[in-house]
Length: 69
Image (cartoon, rainbow, N blue to C red; front, side, top):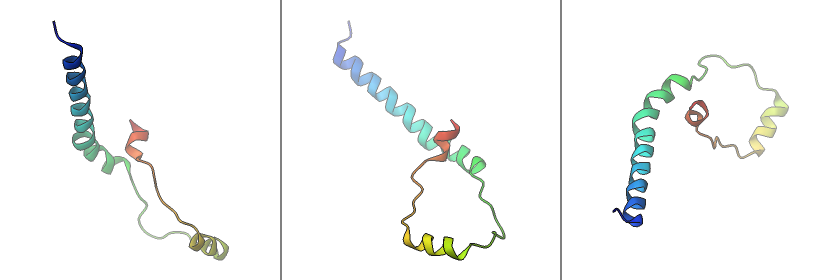
């Protein structure tokens, strides 16, 4: 009979391999197709919005590919 510790280690390895496959094999092919950025001319930015934008620390802290899965 397989010990609980060996079963736990095997399950952990399976989860890590599945995550690695998702992260490095699947997502690189999906992300460029789904993440379309606008190219070209953007509408003019209001002066008040430009001043506010300069005072803010802005970051994109999400992974779009996880939203599509």
